[in-house]
Length: 381
Image (cartoon, rainbow, N blue to C red):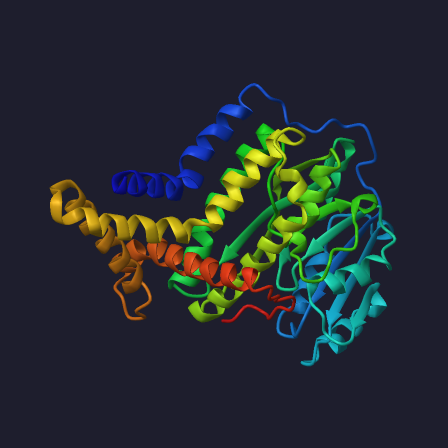
């Protein structure tokens, strides 16, 4: 029985990164995910930029948006300031002569609440979400909007490329993991729809937006609600944006806890999609891509404990325990600042995974306690 626990835990831990991608690739074989060009290529678009204390970067972000290759009379830009106190609002007001609008929320309530309020001011039939520290490629809005020529598509996420500000596990690990997530989104799009989005370069039909409860994560709940209503949610790698990642591991950990907690609450809010009879594809993908991954810390603990109990009586399990110990040792070593470049590269992935699964464990504890983390902070350098 103990052997069964070990191998089951190991399999479940590896499943989201190995077996699920293979299954989703097989599911996508022979399917056609291309958009059908049946409508306006340049619909009226409202770009929404949620911001809190982004004075350092908001001007650059707005310059990128104003430089978009998109008809200016069909593009509305709204910065939704969530009680900023560092001069962000004054900088945004400086762009008012160029058509940028400021919506200030007071008191501070979080991303979902500030977006809900800003959407009420939107004139576009397509809503584009842009992070306050994002640098959209000049054609990003055009490429996002063009997908809605296909009436089956309700939500689109683009390619967000994190730029590490340091070589530690927070920055480099985030960048490496994002590349994997983008590859997986390509496979999910071919199979039907993606599960979740990056949130920093996204678009949705205005008619499909609904007021997201402020404790939930819009980047997950909104696309899943679109999927539930029968529309496709896709990834378009041609719509590109760049933003800096956290360089500080503690800041990245706090962000991972907040995102994971709100995602868990979001999955509970759209739990109707987990009905395999009504939503077979969504149920399979959500369990595989999200739920099993968030539960990975449980499988890690079970695999380590069962392996330790099995090791004294078996050379095989003793060897496997040594390998586990080496993996955790590499992960911990990655948090040491002064590492040679070759060793830093070896430790990046295990360190980032350990950081992420530790954050998932804390988020799960907060979830069962009924705690919420609605507000956010700018990424740390």
